[in-house]
Image 1: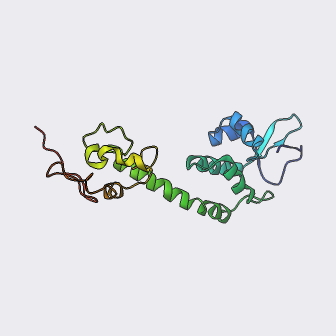
Image 2 (image 1 turned 180 degrees about the vertical axis):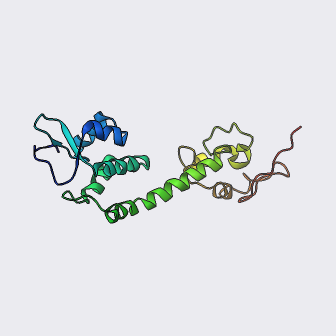
Image 3 (image 1 turned 90 degrees about the horizontal axis):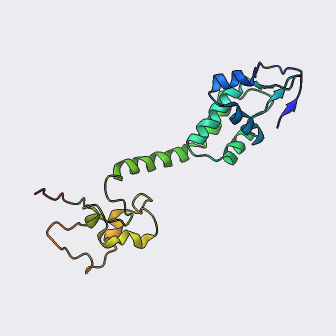
Length: 188
């Protein structure tokens, strides 16, 4: 997507070294983004790459999009909606970033769930934690499919509720009830 052109555009241009310094993005990454159609440079008479000052915002957008997990194809599609002949406005960026909100909300929910459940039984089937006997008796969560079922969204209460009455007969007075947090065992 390079365009050879020795005449400067109406907007200020930055040489590649200045864009690297200002953006914190390596020159090799800038060239990769160009090859991927995410960025556009103009060439000087000597062949050096020059970028629009507004590409600083474009690079920040690309990096933010990558941070939230958008693919390069998703980013390219979003950037294709921006005008090529003018610097994107705040309204342009706001419109694009609104489409990320559901993805960000989902990621936040997943991270909160991960933070809150990682130290307890996660339904992976290892059954190595004392809590697993209460949250995942006999690896019942494994019947829901592969992986750490509770991290993937299965609920402990639903797994325990699906136990047959014989399977869920309490082995002690501290047996787990669906929807209830397990009682802490007393340390001896």
